[in-house]
Image 1: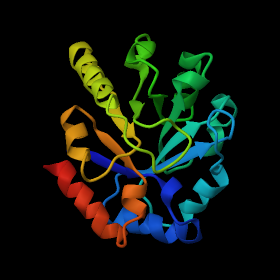
Image 2 (image 1 turned 30 degrees about the vertical axis):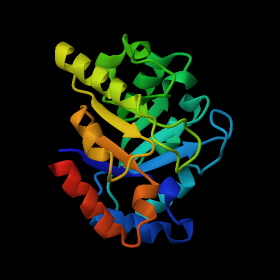
Image 3 (image 1 turned 45 degrees about the vertical axis):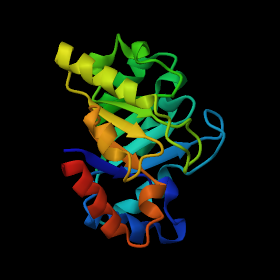
Length: 218
């Protein structure tokens, strides 16, 4: 059964708390927090203050995706009682193993993201230390992009590796996920599905969550 992690990057920020409560009531497994710095990616989103403001409302656990340079300098800012994962980019970390250990030292689970042009093999020496691998199915930096189908092959490759090696990391996908392609990606071996526009552009967020949950439970 797949898990759903709606990305608040696509939310209406004038109604952020209300909408996050709605997706949580609808069965969201995680709240996906996309943090962009305007350097690693060509856009700026928000920082830890916005995420921490959600601590006041009923939410699913946070899945924090740091699309930023020098993530080690900011890890502690995103640690709360609701933070389950902190995910950094392989491409942004000079000493990736050290960064992963740094995340775990804060008592949260560690994940690493791969851009579309970055091969799975770049994580070969660290996969056994990871709790999650995030496969980007769009180039990071903007919401609402079209799904890159080659990401499915990465999902299959990661799933095969963890079966052969006995690893227990989760596989997550982010970018262009919708009701039409979610089941296909799940069948490839994906566990967690980040959906932005496909969730937050719906008229009824709770109903849209139920639609996703139904597909991911089949």
